[in-house]
Image (cartoon, rainbow, N blue to C red; front, side, top):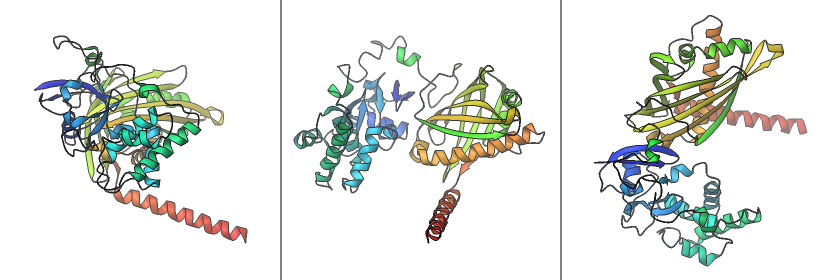
Length: 398
């Protein structure tokens, strides 16, 4: 077994695997990133295409150990990517997918073409996609979709990048990993905690894959709210699904977070550090965690800022919630679902915080949950609201 240290979808991981493990099996079986599909397993069909250091590569014929120190991006890591979002819309518009099995690899290759090609030349697009086989569509819709995205971006004066922005030559990770394994590489020294462990002493900074903005108000002055935020145990008791272990300190808070998204439940165990700036009444909570059962891992960041309202009698709490997910939860934790869950959690946190500051008890902690029925009821309420809004507008126009 070999310890492999690399970055997957902007998250540093360090996982033990056999030297013979392919990169495709590594991301699917060890990280539960099953958007990478396996077809021929000979590097011919292109269904397994991922980005290695920004370059499309066949993950089924690439050994994971050869990617030491490299940046790997799977289709899940392109959820918030602008070009991929445009390609997805174009694939839908041009009927460029049917069974969808080849689509993840096709999108990765198409994204590279959109980056590199100066214009929507059909021949160059067909040559560029010749390594991605599709048994359903006949390629006409796929080519049209890629052409439309290239044309739209060039019309917006977004120029092509020479070589797709590539700045280094050589195999994946070249110039990143240490030449020998006797000393830790710079990439490995900078890694965040591995999915199987969160026992490091330092919580590393990271760039969130998704950032959500939320806000609420409290009927208490900012100074009182800021002092409350200094009570780590008190704040944790107000957060749904959160529990602490041991004695918390600003440098390190250890505990867990229970969450449920539809049929999938997880109990993340991890640690966090707390930063505060009294001069600006702001702060940051940076955390990491993993769930052994679902093999999911997360990094999260909450930034808050307190603003006075109504002459300082009321406080507006502005939150910026950033996170990166890997594993099974990354498959169901799409931004829309997570945004709904965050909205519910913030509302419950605000109510608990207000109750706690008023001398009450926030109540017994329970898992943070977004169930199927709660999603369905929200959708139904939204549709009813839109229907009544249209009816009222129609009557007002008569």
